[in-house]
Image (tube, rainbow, N blue to C red; front, side, top):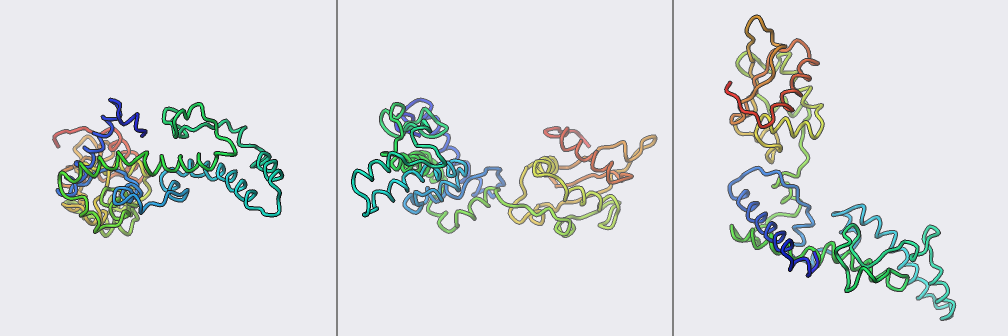
Length: 313
């Protein structure tokens, strides 16, 4: 965000939203709430102390890998220019000619048609009159530095400062120094979840007509372990009311994840019913389906069509 954008009505709104986000996350931490917010560890490194984040392509890669890859190619022009300038065996005129002829993969910097605006955001100028300032072999190094600075430095510092200010309204932001950036993003739900059958067997209780050796329970665990990432989110939302597991995974669910048998009523059979849940208790009512294929089909229907639905059971 440029200074001009920050002073605009929309810019002020964005800054306010970051402040509210900081306050929301601090309150969630204080209340031990599970929230589904994916934050980059670099965000906390910038918020902790800007000087701890080196303004480098490596740091940019943690935020935007495609931008980092593009800048890496553009930086080759600057690196080659520097190599020529430091070559003591070349005369001044030879250096000038060689610099003007620099090409990467057969393309000169002029042919790229770059100007001093942030890639992907033409409204954000990296320098005064950036729209009219072309990137040349003479200023390509400056261009790369300004893109990196706008991505990790002054371009995001206002948002990070607003986040800190909002967070500190609940409790001091400095308290987060007890955690690493990686641990902080885990607190906010960005963590790899273990859905292996072994973990599920050790974390789920079967009751009221089922035990852990029941065919339908085993089939349920098999189907759960094969769900895609989005299906896992839908399943958790359907069963627990949150699309993410708490830190510690299934074992940390309170109350414990429980599966019970859902009886059928004649003339209907178990295959005619959908799975139902008691979200507040992490309680799954599973019909004794005739096959794993039927269970899978009925489960997917329930988690897809039952999102946001509330019915008396």
